[in-house]
Image (cartoon, rainbow, N blue to C red; front, side):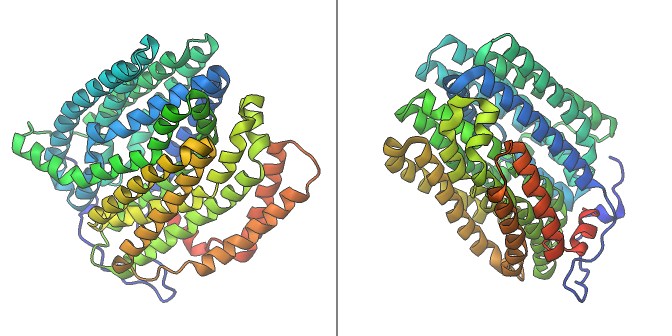
Amino acid sequence: MPSAPESLTGAPSHRALDASGALPEAPRGGNLLSLAAVQALRMGAGVAVNLMLLRALGVEGLGVHASLTALVALAAFGAGLGIDRLLRREIARDPASAGPRVAAGLAASAALSVVTGTAIVAWVALVDGRREVVLAALFAAVALGLQTLAAVPVAYFHGVRAMGLGVPASLAGRACLVVGTAIAAGLGLGVTAAFAAQALDAAVTLAVTWGVFRRLGVRLPAPRPTEVRALVRDALPFGLNVLFGGVYLGVDVLLLAWLRGDAEVGAYRAAGMLLALFPVLADTLTTGLFPRMARHLGRPDLAGAELRFASRLLLAVSVPAAAGAVLTAEPLLVFLGGAPFAASAVPFAVLAPLLPLRFLNNGYGMTLSALDRQDLRTRGVFLAALLNVLANLVVLPRYGAVGAAATTLLTEAALLAWNRRAVAPLVTGLRLGDTLVRIGLPTAGMAATMLLLPPVHVLLAIAAGGVVYAGAALLTGAVRRDDLRHLRRV
């Protein structure tokens, strides 16, 4: 395999913090820029696809789409078992082991994807039986399998901190998704064609990713059964995190479909559709920081500085976004989906405070995984999933989509409490009070501006609030200059 840069040897960093408590300077890598490009593409494509689905499928059709998407999210555990997440950490620490690890990861992912895909289609055929829904499940299963395979070479890119190598594949795949969805929506082809577009996206992404990976010259030995079994065993805690996360993020949709029908699911899905895109921003930052954090094992001072840096940026984005979502819920959803989606406004407003909770959970969860405490992260997500299922069984029959939003918010808050307690022994300095004040004041100014504006288009109100927040945040120091310098070196 190509030689790794000296900074990627996997040896833990022993550089001290400077006098201000900031992280020491690191070599410029440009990884965050590459990740940001990919995630901006994902968000842009996601917004475009979601808008087309809102208009083309209507409330009930969107409910069918959401139910199948939730089922696939649950099944993702079986397809990948979190193998890609384990590979990122292990390759970051020992790049020389990449060849055998990637080979074993591909073999395991291929076998698991076939079994999982077959189970998805069989379940939908048994429980639903509608021909178009079963065919949609087939496309969804194919997309899941191809995405799982593509995630293995991408894990290598991340492990050696060459994350820009994944940009061409994301660009090609997302372009196919948008074009395919536009054709399906324009021709009125329904839910089946929407999932066919996802399968096309996954196929193109895998083809381009594999082409880039092969040009790197990484030698892939024939995987030995013992290596594959060992990889699956070691990845299982990561996979269980995927499973339990899928339960607490998707079981409310499946229970709504069972208890209240497709229309209620469609209203709830519309409420969460835009909010679900924002955590992509958190994932961009924490994915970029993961290899760095993995090198801070046993150094709570460096790990704490890294986590505080991430938390400041995560809250600076998510707190104003949540406040703006509450203030613009109904006009925004009616603008995007039409009058039938006015019913989604209340669950949308209830879900909005989820953003800062989920952003922080992303940062704390990344820290636990990077510092070899994935077991604690998985246990927390399991308890969150259990809480969510029990709460939904009590609340959903009476309160429907609004109840589902409330139980999701409760679950995320409980998970945050768990993750913060779990990460505390691994890092120093988890205090966020000063950060919350510096962000809260500009957010209050933004909210006051939006409330005092005369009646204007919702997008103008959002733009005005954003300008006020950005200006006030500069004055209060919501994000430090040192943070911006460090951001360029991720």
